[in-house]
Amino acid sequence: MISGQKENNGATLLYEQVALEISGLIEQGTFRAGDRVPSIRQLSHRFDVSINTVMQAYAQLEDQRLIEARPQSGYYVRSRVPEIREPVPQPRASIVPATVTISDLCQQVMRNMTKSELLPLGRVIPSPENLPIDKLNRIMASELRRCGEQAVLYHMPPGYAKLRVQIAKRAIMAGISASPDEVLITSGCVEAVLLALRATCRAGDTIAVESPFYFNFLQMIAELGLKALEIPSTPQEGISIEALRYAIEQNKISACLVISNFGNPLGSLMPEGRKRELVELLSRHEIPLIEDDIYGDLVFGNERPGTAKSFDTKGLVIYCSSFSKTIAPGYRVGWAIAGRFQPEMERLKMMMNISTASPTQIAMAEFLATGGYDHHLRTIRRIHARNLSQMADAIVRYFPSGTRMTRPAGGFILWVEMPFGTDAIQLYHRALECGISIVPGPLFSLTNKYGNHIRLSAARWDEKIEHGVKTLGELAHELLPQ
Image 1 (spheres, helix red, strand yellow):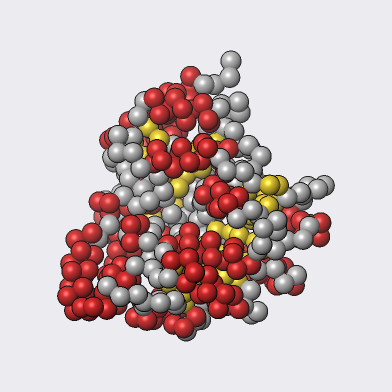
Image 2 (cartoon, helix red, strand yellow):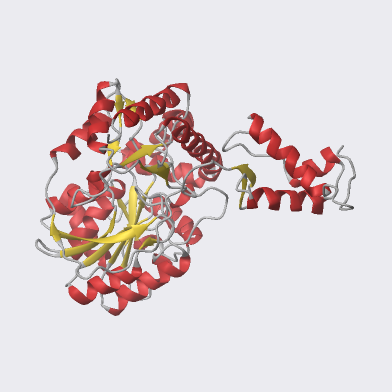
């Protein structure tokens, strides 16, 4: 019980005593970054104070940036992280598209991500111990027996009907109203985006992309012979609508490609109003929007963010996603809801590989139908939120002073900005020598920007990962400019 001192002649307010008690536990390490602190009701009983008193105490701790509220989930200890908070970028005097080239370094980084002897600090896939592997295996075996020959035959585009029904139902949570016939099953989100690019662009065309942007998509743009036009983006707002508007005035743009929720690498979450503005701007100019929402289900808390597709009235938004970041990367089950481009994308899909693998479509449909997906999401969201907080705290402890990073509200990616002059590519090579793989920032740009940035993955957190972060920090100290 806390002493019932009230505000009288300078005495400590009761809610301040509660706040001091909790902040002391945080300082002592009883509650660490990412941990959930006791609920308001629990503290009310524990300290024998009113619920209103606890709410005031938690409000004070929020103001002190010691804890944060997560919708329908409670209060959690915040990471004490220097955050990247750049002002919304203003349009440049000239925004010019650039020819994209195939990067040998990109191929090397991708190969290193899969090497078992390297600690995968840059690999953005969920950690196997957090996936429902046993349940998926049981469902796969059962469904293969039940379906018989249907499990080994093609399910021609648009794909396995039962899976399309389940995806159409789940799309409602993202604000998308689509019939099963409007869902095209693909071999992962990457194929969905590739089909969308081929359906909307021809060699030599220009596509607007965020900057920084997922390096594999930049390589895909290069492979298709397209030009990319980099539009500045921020962790808080996503792509700059103002800069994009200016770019459209100066250039002929055939399509725009964005990751709308918890984008790679910034982890940015576009506010709903900005998504609407983006769709309205592109629609006025009849420019297709390719929306990758592969991370949308990984929001911290229970309220899933909406999508740009939900504001589409002309069929110009091609919505792409998959289960690779949530359930089963190796299943390669993705989909597109493509509006007016659906027939062309189905034709291209049939030309490329006829069909996505039937067994994985069948197993995923049953997993979604039995309700296992939502339970799994609740678990993995908590894990990722905790992992990100712990990794961020470790970066603060081990990296040079002045290091900053993003604070995503979902996903499991951290974008880390080291002090100016620290060479991320040198750090990448030095880390490899120490058995660690990361992704250097210049890969996320066409013009070798972000030279002092790296992308890290918090899909997993344990002693080995923490030791790897410590080693990276030591290497970063060694690379500081003299």
